[in-house]
View 1 (cartoon, rainbow, N blue to C red):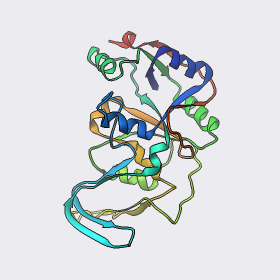
View 2: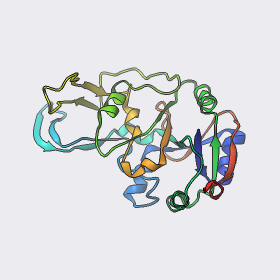
View 3: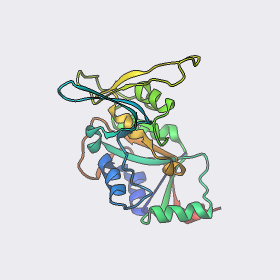
Amino acid sequence: MFIKYGAEANLKSLMEFGKMYFNPCKYFRALEAEQLLKGIGDCNDGGIVTNAGRVFVQDKANNFYEAEEQCIAFVIQRCLSIPIFCLKQSSDVTLSADECAEIHKQFPNHTHALIIEDEKSFLENIQSSFQQKAFSHHVFYEEKFTIDFLDFLEAGLSDIDFNIPKSSSEYYAEIFTDPVDKNAENLKVKHFRIDNSNFFKTMYRKKPFFSSQAEYRIVLPYEKIGTGTVYKIHPFGATLCKIDDLTQ
């Protein structure tokens, strides 16, 4: 099921009128940079952070630079204005007293929970309302890159039908993997580009600190916003209750 925490009026508006409030990616990056609402902000949102290793950098003059045992972090600039809507995905709606207290601490304005039991119906609503231009998937939690996330960046699909943007000759980053164990069985060296067809997938990685949120994201790669914006979907059935009432 999906669970959306928030203010009562906002959740009622979502359920009864289909008013979905999206924030741009840069909103979440800025919150942590300003040390505000630690549970929401993530300064790496929409970015790429590599493991320590051999790094190649190419400048605009096509000069290459190489360095050993380096980490590199950068943001895909186009991501900064892409709308994001966040939910929790869980098989259990109940909360421990500690979990409830943590939600109130991280999200002081969240008093209620909207429980969406029928995930399939809700995602079909998203698919039709956004005319197959919304990308939907769970978030990966990791400090640096993992093979699972690299696979997702390269070829991962949305959980709903999605019109993949066309690739372009210009690209934002080029990724190579060079495994340490050259003799490993089933070794698969990766080489692909982050371009218009997949740049938005970089918004699906967060730090392990946030893993308890079990976040599921709906991203609108074809849209650009500068601040919080309401988009409309069809009204749907769900259960609205107080967060405190979910405590075991």
